[in-house]
Image (cartoon, rainbow, N blue to C red; front, side, top):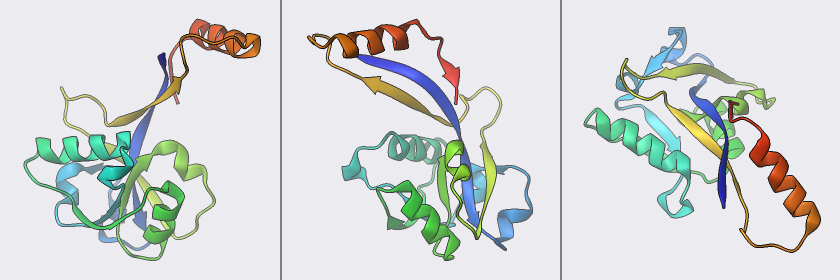
Length: 145
């Protein structure tokens, strides 16, 4: 069973002093030719799929210079000036100095760039605690993270 729990919008993580840092919001077009730190395809992440779908929509591919399956590691690479990264908003709560965040915007009429947080569990299970947890999760309204 898969239960979508929350949606979290995407931010662009930039090193302090980056030329795009003066913008209040950043569009995918602003990221053309920017060196990027992104998840690898073999990691099978939702972020990889969202990132490439956004760039495909605009007819160009991201300029990926490093791949990292660990989002905090990618943000530390951003702080070191190795590139920019696109990540869910919740990560800006991590205490990583040297990184600034700007919302990633999409044009009107397109879905907001975001990630979905899911709960994955087997449909059949004999554990009462798991059943209670799943029943509670199913009764809660889906929300923005």
